[in-house]
Structures are given as C-alpha cells and as structure tokens.
Length: 476
Image 1 (tube, rainbow, N blue to C red):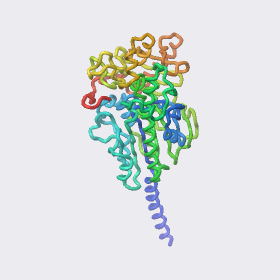
Image 2 (cartoon, rainbow, N blue to C red):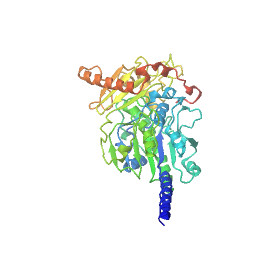
Image 3 (cartoon, rainbow, N blue to C red):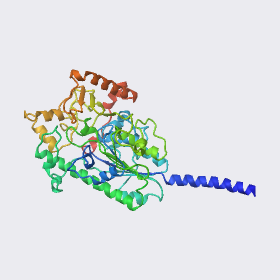
Image 4 (cartoon, one colour):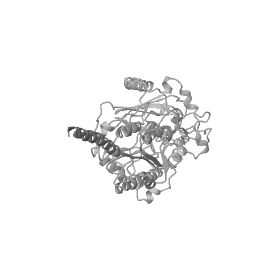
C-alpha cells in the first residue's frame, strides 16, 4: 500500500508539473505594439494638448502608465525601428543605422526570438524599414489586418503583433483638420515657427492623421476585447519619432526625438500612473522578452521597463534613469557633394539638452542648393510650413525661423530647459554654462565610448558609405 501511495505521489508531482508548465506556457502574455509613423510629443490629449483628441491613447494611459520622458534612439524611421526591434542603440546597427538601409546581419529581433519560443508573430502595414531585411521577417509575417492575423493564429498560442500605420506621415489632405471640425485659432504654434494661419492649418492636418491612427488602434483593441484577449495582452502605443515638420523629425530637439508612450497590461501593471523616468524605445525589446520569460538579446543596450511598470509609484521611479541618449546619422541623401548624413549625438536630462554635431559643415536639414538625390532641404518632408519658411528666408522679420530649421549648426549646442523649453537659444558659448557644457559633453562621450559608437571609438566613416535603397523607392 505504501509503495502504491509513493507511485501515486510521484505521478501526481510529475504530471502536475507538466500540467503546471503547460498552464504557465499558455498564460504567457500576448504583445500588441502600435507604432505611428511620424507621431511626436506632445501631440496627445494626455499630455495637455487641448485641440487633438486621442481617446485610445488616453485610455491606455489611464489603464496603465503614461511616460512623459520617452525618446527614440534616432529620429528617423529605419534607424528608430531597428533600434526598437533589437533593443540596441542605433549606432551599433551598421547598415541599419540609416534610412532606407539594409537590416544588419547578426542582429536578431525580439520578434524573431518570440517566434522561436513558440509565439505567433506578425505585423500590419509598416513594420521594419523602410529598407530591406533580406526576407528575414524581422517584424514577423505581414498581414492585411489584425482580424486576419487572429484568424490564422492557432488556438491558445500566444501572439506578438506589430500594428504599424503610415499615419501621420506626409503628404496630408489639405484642410482635412478643418473639415473634421478643428479650429486654427485653437492651435498652439511652437515658437520656432511663425504664428500664421497657414501653419496652424498645416498642424491641424497632421492632427487629423494622428486622430485617425488613434481611432484605428482603438478598433484593434476592441477586437482583442471581443475575443477575450485583453486581460493578458501587453499593449504599447508610441510614435517612431517626431512630427514631419521643420525642426521636428530628423532632429535631436524634443520635437524630433521625444515621443508619446503609454503601456498597459491588466494582469500586471497598476493603473493610471504618470512616470517621468527617462526611457528609450530601445527598452521595449528587453521589456517584452522579460515579460515572456525569455533572455534578452545579445548586445542589448536597452533596459526592461518591467520594474517601472509593476511598481505602484508615480513620477521618478528609478534613480538610474536621469538621462537618455539619442543620435542621428543619414536620413535622406541630402548633401550636394556626398551621400553621408549629418552625424549628431545628444544627452537629455531634466534641465539640459546637449547636442554634439560631428560635421558642423554639413547642412542638417539638407543642402540649400540640392543634393545628389535631387531636392533641396530634403531632410524635411514637403509641406506648407516648410515651403513658407523657405520662401520667406530673406524677410528680416522671418529669417530667424529659417535659421532655426534650415541653417548650419555649431559643433556644440546646449539648451537650458528651465528657461528655454523649446530649445531655441544655444548657450554653449556663454561663460556661466562652461562647467555644465564640459560635464555633459564628457558624460555623453563616455557613454558613447561605453556603447561602442564608431564616431567615438573609430570607424565612423562607414556611416557615410551605407547603401541608400530609397533611390529605387518612393521619397521618404
């Protein structure tokens, strides 16, 4: 009888262990990542914008965490998305550091890691890129809709879905914002633009596309809800970099590198918290992998956000997240005499933004005489705001706006955000900031050295040589 009991106990423990393991496996969280194309901070109602309406984003924030200091690794599509997929600073990604480049060999994505671990993975519309990943499906298999993806997903298999639209990338439908009921007089025009009706209307057209993205994400989340998938799905909603206006996208100022970010996970994350920690979208890959019980990818420089997400604290949660690094290499081929970009790196703290321009002789918004690719000022997408500022660059009252958006920049830029939140006045050459400039420059270069930036450790000329595939594709 005793032997029978022991056999029964042995079977119960081992079978129960298998059942527990299977049960645990089935409870691995799903991941739904919604990323907009050219949606920047602070353009969401959760951040206090009174014109734009983003109820889906606001709901995610109310049911999870709203991040107020979220930054991309690089404010250009391909580099930003590659950094998200790999969890690495963009400058480590070789040919993947530039727009319309090749996804680099030897850098697995978190999506591929989840697929290898049994996840059903896929994406909608814009995933990796623009560029080429050599057919590796680094963002998963492409689907026509979330509904199609869920229908193909095997029952009870955890999933990872990348929901990427092309909103709010230019071009826009002229006056779409006004026709939607928004009023130009309500827009708060950033002070690096002239406060004019044409620019207010242009911003409203951008707002309209942001609202469309928000609405589409809401429809996708409603589908997850109807299928009973909401409680154990990590939902992330963010932009890939700043808005497609002068001094926004392809710049390291806040309107270029800072993005909206909200995350919820009903099963794990306390609700309705605002967090001011400096975080990077490179932190998403290690967050997803840790949440699913997997090891982080080799070479990961991002850090998991799970400690912040699971905390009940608000404001500054972590004592070691008091700055963030950003940078840029080639966006478009925008110089008239070479195919390189305008290399820059930055460190952002609560009170200061320091930017180092490695090639101050290069035009950061594109050469005014054109480029080997063709257009003038090609780092900035065409639109009414860009056109107006360029057309009036010789007007004495408007020259400053051209200089802020299109002019050359010195090697060192330093902005005191306590006095200058829009980063308009470079104080790098003022004696009262000498110590601050020295401290931040040393800190930036120490971090770049630590993380193997070729612009610091050597080999930076390679950034100017990577192939630009956009010559055979639509203009970015």
